Length: 114
Image (tube, rainbow, N blue to C red; front, side, top):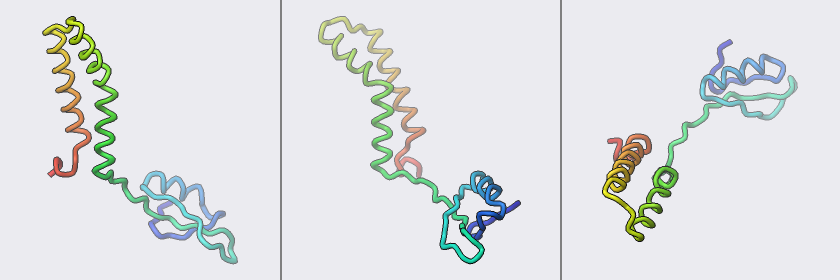
């Protein structure tokens, strides 16, 4: 069965069909005031999540922390004790470039999308 946003349904009238339709169509069902027929529900659209600048900033920081912070700490320790090699530095810079490229592609700030 096909439903539409704003449609009113009752608990005993194809409720589970309406739930399945909502799952496939970015919608949900809100209970509204019952009437003489019983419990009443309305199909409503789910607004898409649009992250704020701060949300994106936090996601970027978390990604970087997860994917490179431990290597950065190792770099600092090994540079301090003189065991960090040129090969280590090249590998670190390649990892940093890979992480940065992923962030820019997958977590762009709004101005980077224009």
